[in-house]
Length: 133
Image 1 (cartoon, rainbow, N blue to C red):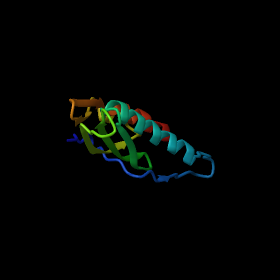
Image 2 (cartoon, rainbow, N blue to C red):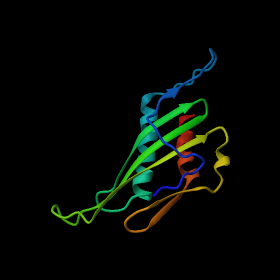
Image 3 (cartoon, helix red, strand yellow):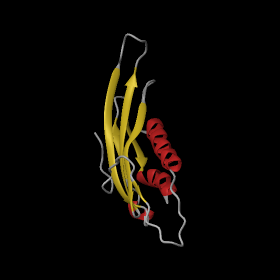
């Protein structure tokens, strides 16, 4: 189960860089990939459990200062190669206005894992997303 936060949705990152002639802002795919990796790593370690837990950013888009995100998360535990105790996948989705990161307030993103309910402050993910600007 996921809890929606400020329309938290995540999607494949498509960067629309609107720059004027005097602005040489350059969002390279490397920096986008770094942000995606940081978000996936954060979700893997804070919203998943088990010895084979995983997370990936399926979508991440930036339209002006609005970031939209979709993250796939898996909690999985295999005590040996023949036995899987649990394997659960879930997605979180969010849309954030990066021009006003405080608008997220103290909102949380929570998932019910096979072990317990895990929550993180949405502003932790917004802080990572701010690296896109």
